[in-house]
Image (cartoon, rainbow, N blue to C red; front, side):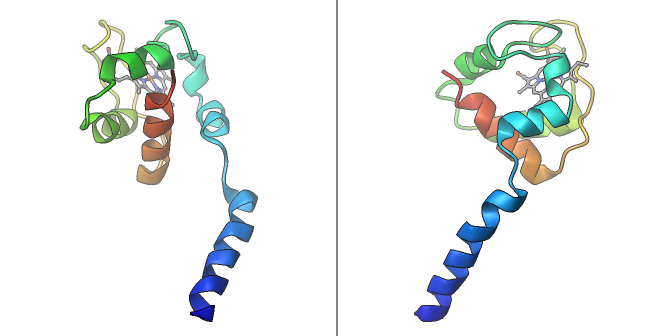
Length: 101
Ligand code: HEC
């Protein structure tokens, strides 16, 4: 299957050109204005979020939706505004946040 192999190579070669790390994405989308990795600022620290949802299989989809729509009431009365991110970016951010230890 030479074609498949080539397609694979092309993907691997192209990836670093466009892909931001989730950390860079979070910085560029302004998430870090309200969140830090380990402690509460305006919103919860991302490690706290990961701890809260550890073992929750619905968490990636739930958090991706929350990142896009915003909301409040889970961590307190402060409101998280909806973020201007694509569905793919929201999923990338959610799984990165949930992978914090
Ligand atoms: C203006 C401040 C602000 C910004 C900017 C912000 N957040 Fe939040 N975030 C919050 C607050 C406040 C909460 C707590 C909401 C709650 O209690 O339901 C929160 C909660 C969260 C949660 C946990 C949600 C839950 O239901 O447990 C995640 C995940 C999250 N934010 C990710 C992000 C990401 C990713 C971005 C950037 C795209 C971002 N936030 C930008 C304030 C912010």
